[in-house]
Image (cartoon, rainbow, N blue to C red; front, side, top):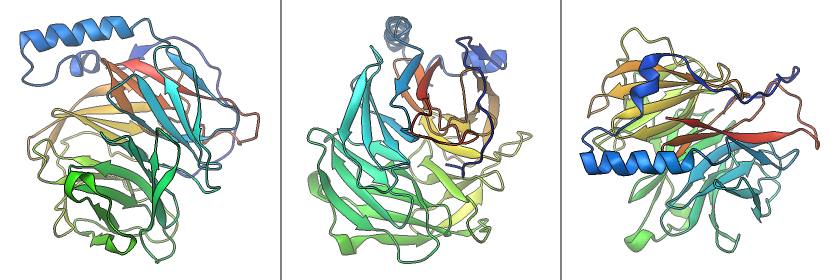
Length: 331
């Protein structure tokens, strides 16, 4: 997430384009997919092509994070009151499933148990049961100020949160069968190595995911445009070698599919696509995905050959009547 500014909103159109031919083929197949898998993926992509390209959200909702589980439903959080909205990707219809606590919802991820892990922008995080809308756990990630819990990534044993204002990651260790930790079991991992924190209320750590081999984490540092490989045990970081690719300034949400990394460039209204080495230490730029309907997209989730991005519209002054939407593009 980036901090909002104000200006007029651009015209909305329905045209779609890929900025380069490399990007057009970048996401067609996962590496190592068999012919059968490729056929199934192609069938799913064709089926989803008739689904709406634009999914409207409630006026004034102010989305930032998006996550999609195994079914055709996207979950989004409000930067306004923190409410959680569920949208049906097939129809574009949806509704609020959990009323917000009055504090923002930023990055969020859904696990396989129907639990939504939500970064709360300030010092905290919470876990929501998407079947009931109930907040089943809340955590104070840090007592330091300023603090900005921005994004979250789930592994089988840990929920990882970034802090945009502190050089740290926060870990919620998950127990047997995904048991949630007690409130005092939050682990802080201080970032070091190649990491140089820009002080003050400047967006540093933002989107987070894992390396393709699952042995380390990847974190984008928005303000300076660096992608860091992070040792989760020590916090030592190493800048990922992305060759001659432009800096990932305004890099926001990250999505890893196989070895392909999608980096949302919010202010550029684009997604940069990289093919990573298995260990995540290097990557090759494959292309940029753009769309005229993008209006400062922040995060990205995938379903059936498509990418879904919420328009945060940070260049538009938010009002109760401001319109918001999710944009779908082919990958």
